[in-house]
Image (tube, rainbow, N blue to C red):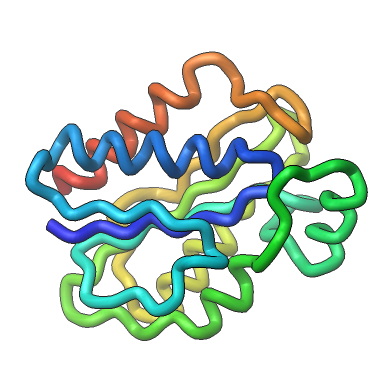
Length: 163
């Protein structure tokens, strides 16, 4: 199995979730080739069995250039390319191309979900969703992740690998 996890992260929380998902895939499939890459380093996704894409929820959805600029001004430790432009260049998935979407978000009634927008873009490019979009909770904008979320992300990654 070849799996690629691509993520955008502002404060490091989404990167932690991506790493935990990668660990889960490796635990479920010890012989898997797993790459976990920030979107700025992702480039073109080659022939993969599983593509997992995630980002932070900004203003109830996927980040924008404006929301990334505002995050940087607020002290975001990781600032750079966004998923929107990367997803525009994503090649169409072939037969059996599986993908999944995740995000990090605050636990608030109207926080929104970047994962829904990511999933919509993946399906637009003919990737079959291997799971419903997943959201992982942060205590506050800058983090940390809520208790148990890293373990939940690892378990989700393992489930994705087994499907």
